[in-house]
Image (cartoon, rainbow, N blue to C red; front, side, top):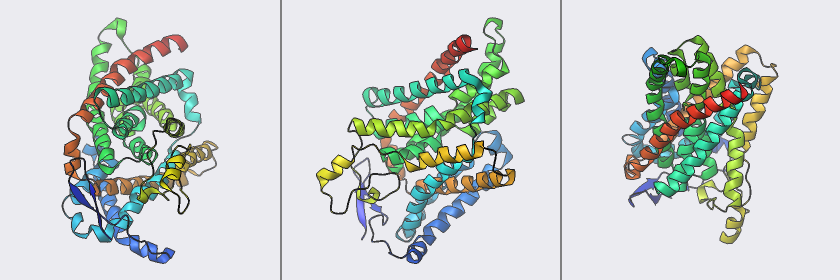
Amino acid sequence: MRSTVPDDCGKTHADTGEFDRQPRGWRQRTAHRLPGLALTALLAAVAISVGRVDWFASAGISALTVAIVLGMLVGNTLYPRFAHTGAAGVTFSKQTLLRLGIILYGVRLTFQDIAHVGIAGVAIDVLVLSSTFILSWWMGTRLFKLDRETAVLIGAGSAICGAAAVMATEPVVRGRAEQVTVAVSTVVVFGTVAIFLYPALYHFIHQSHPLAMSPAFYGIFTGSTVHEVAQVVAAGRSIGENAANTAVITKMVRVMMLAPFLAILSTVLARTGARPTPRPSEAFQPGGALPPIGASQSSHAHLSKRVVIPWFAVGFIGVAALNSMVVLPKAAVAAAVTFDTAVLAMAMAALGLTTHVSAIRCAGIKPLALAAALFAWLILGGGAINAVVTALLG
């Protein structure tokens, strides 16, 4: 059965089979998903190849960014012709593979990273993350009159680790594909600006001796305020190896805060009753509330207020802890990082495939304005936080 769902403009698009009856056996389900999985895998492979091109790498444009762009191009041109066939695999990529990718993201981190930036670095990350997200929620819903999901997703992307944080937050707030894409787009836009703006700010400030910053200070400032890991690397390398190393370590500590952030966000949404009732397509997805068969609408509402700790966030911390024990061979870690990049690229491609350009147009200028305000806060407020905490804690 094919259904239609309204977009933000009130128009309808074919809902590509998410509510279709799925085959029961695992072999049948696997075969049912193969066309969509093959498509997302192909787009991911192309994106990873493009992301390795020197120009894209130096500009901080990662394979994940390329994957969502390719997905949108195909999703708004060729994909609608065979969407019904590929829907099961695309949905699997966007949901299950995404969660697997977030879990494996922990292999990039170790708890020893915290020691490299010290208490000051951790305090800066916590203050920048919390202030940016709270500001996004307040400004997004009160000042710009955006829906809560869009404000939360933009805030997560700006406050933590860009597209990966947006994708990880989506199952908690149950955002629509176009809301996620809008949030990811803002990360791409302002993160790219940061790659060029931050080194320029460093050289400008460095000329004023009373305000001169060291490469180490610049590294912590960059790692605690720039959106994506790839963008942090690009901005840090523009100053030097010392600045780049400090920036990446600070960024990794910030990424490690993704799991507790998701747990706290889930708790807040549940306690305030702000968590939406699960949609039919989400009722049995990992990380979502699991209503019993035959549950009434009122019992669904009751379940939606329970605290749901995303299982993939726990897995993320578990993998990071395992990696911290230095029991994994370097070759295994490198292979896991490569596999994780491929899995996340498939999830991004699937997101692009299910995003309608018309819905993004309907979002208007407000999400971009919110992201711009957060970007200004990250530079000015984040810089002030860095200066004060460094002065107090050294």
